[in-house]
Image 1 (cartoon, rainbow, N blue to C red):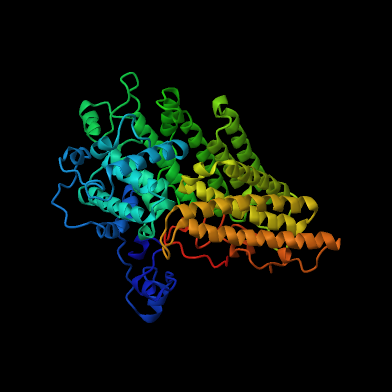
Image 2: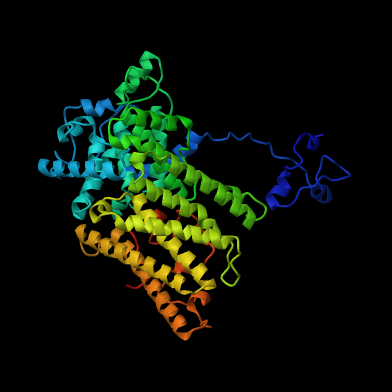
Length: 578
């Protein structure tokens, strides 16, 4: 019978149209109960097999959303191009079209910006380095896209010029990628540099999302094949050489060039961090091959920073593990993670982090950036202590030590961050600034939770130390914003960040004043605004102590004005008054 041949879970056309449950009739099994009662013909629509979209198709569907807006940035009609051109075609052209030939920059200014980028990359993002001996002329011919991205991020002290350079860069990028179909290491490196210092990008690029840019990088690196061992066939090797992906030395044919391996690691780091910040699956998951590449760079290093990349991969992998345990696995549970389960998970992650620190060689024992990332991973792993704590409910004995450990990691991070010279902080990457925002907000939430239960002098002293660190950060951010030469009325990331810092500082000042009154009174203040939640001047994000219901777990958006909301880089002004 017809109905016996179809799945029992499928509804007939009549029930489906009315969104009713379709049950077979006992009198006529081939007809549903409702159709039998009303004398209606019962027909089951033909099932159309669905094809599961591949990961590549899903990724491409996401990227297609960017095409329209990118093409709008094209300076004019583009000449006809073949459906796929290799990256060498642009370099072989005699007519160089870049910011220098367009009159946006002078040669001397370009040389200054290139020198500044070299310093920025060596200190903060050693995954895209300029080859030794390659100057402006060489970059124009051999690395035109990377050259433009370098100019954009290095011109952060001249906002009007940065606007012009970024507009030129995005127009050229869209023409190469979407119109000409270019795929090259140069294109990938340029996009990765643009993503790493994403917070420097101006308001006109607000429609571009960091996660989508990371997905674009992941797609391109798969297209180029850098995520796996080089092909052994001669014709394949030749094709990849045309894309700027020459093999390593003849003694080690298992890996691509040093540049390609660094780029692979950079894509993994940036895509992982962007996906965690946006609570999305990573477009480029970890593989053992990328760690092998990092080990090969450490053993056969060209520059000193090559020795550090392995340990950056490992600490980012721990951060990914935290996200997987406390977000993905916990979301799949029938009940929220209990205190005992949380404690066991924290101990396991703590052991991973301790093993990572112990594996650092002696020459990296004082590497500031590695240790700040380690502090971040520690704070991230212990944030679970805030989960499930309601404002009126008591803090469980299990979660109190977890929160104190979390605060210890935050304090260590703040101490390292404030000890960095202002010159080094000027060229932090977007993620470095995001770390600072996250740890500050986390410290605020933990202070509220702990101090709601205890308000002794040690607690007050801890808040005072954090308040002092925040003063240093606020002063430096003010100085940095003054250096950007931003015209009045034009938004900037540092300007928005200042509003956040001022709001948090006002909250800390109010807490300290309340604590002083508490100690002077010699007892518990009944109307403690920290407990009651009536404290004015603080950011709205502090009005809840439970991270998950606020959707603020981990390296996630804290306020609507924050950078990694990624809906816009126009940076709306904070609601907190200065």
